[in-house]
Image (cartoon, rainbow, N blue to C red; front, side, top):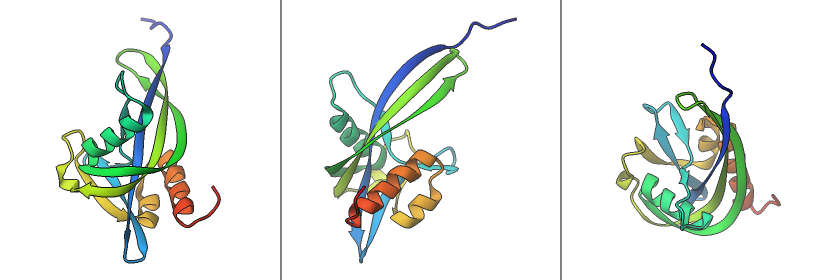
Length: 149
């Protein structure tokens, strides 16, 4: 039985890198998914009436339990993924922002994620699974070190 070619659609999301200074180093928050096998940055789909900035703040709050203040626009990343059940190929774009930690506890994350953890930025770059997360975290490290990006 032959399947029709996949439909192509787009999705747009937003997320953030929450940071805090910790005894001369910088910590960021990663979320854990799929039994802890995936460490990634918090992000999610834009609601109809939201800006990308509002979405980033909401998704960070929901997935990490933390509130932050936007300090920088980190740009966006794009990638393709395939929904086999619906035979749809998606081009997803995620807009990221750098957020300075204001308040909250990582244990207050929602049920979409298994855990949210503070980790020093160098370890975070090593531990994230996705190449695009590494690129965003490297950009954050450069910004916080005062380097041109």
